[in-house]
Image (tube, rainbow, N blue to C red; front, side, top):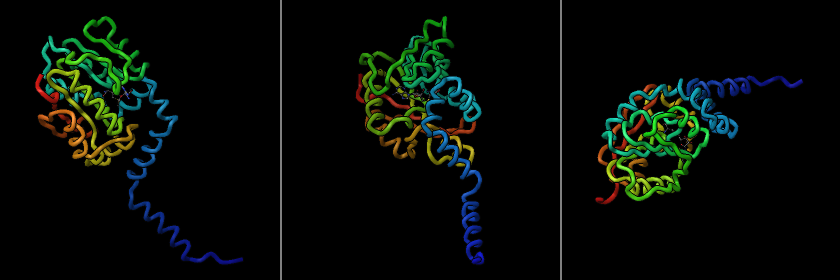
Length: 237
Ligand SMILES: C[S@@+](CC[C@H](N)C(=O)[O-])C[C@H]1O[C@@H](n2cnc3c(N)ncnc32)[C@H](O)[C@@H]1O
């Protein structure tokens, strides 16, 4: 019987050591990233209750993000606000005046409607953000939070151009960056379902094609690092 060569053991051990250099958190991030992008996981996360249960431990209530979105929108009680890709309506509460949240996921919109039942200033509609049926200049302000990384560049161009057409004054965009410091922040972003998390310069370039960027900055909200873009529509209205 052939004797096992020591070299083989060494190389097997070497591979394990190599993996070790990547680190437990790196492997965990990769594994979670793959799991989150599996078609069955994606379908499961379309259920609003599952989505919220999985998301909450990772991003919490997004208290800081909400404070900043409210501040940057600067919407008065008379100002109308459009929330593109509103999900289950988590950001509806940052708006005091007339609000319309649109999202493609019927079940998310259903839950958002339940949450705000009886509040006539909050409306929600199932609508594809890439084909919005809204009149030009029909909203004072708009937000699109945690959504750009779900769309490829061309779809984003379409959405941003639509926002420039539909919104009169200000558009607030919040999204993620792919390379935050800290393993937990990277874990959160790698386990996100979005396939298009862009480096900051890429996001800036994409947005600047369609909107005027007044300012931008990164901030921490719970375990995540996000980037805020405060924009206005192209051209004076
Ligand atoms: C990460 S969630 C963000 C939800 C919400 N803005 C928030 O931060 O709580 C992304 C949302 O984009 C929605 N979405 C994806 N593609 C869409 C499309 N083509 N039109 C409208 N909504 C879309 C999803 O249904 C999901 O609710």
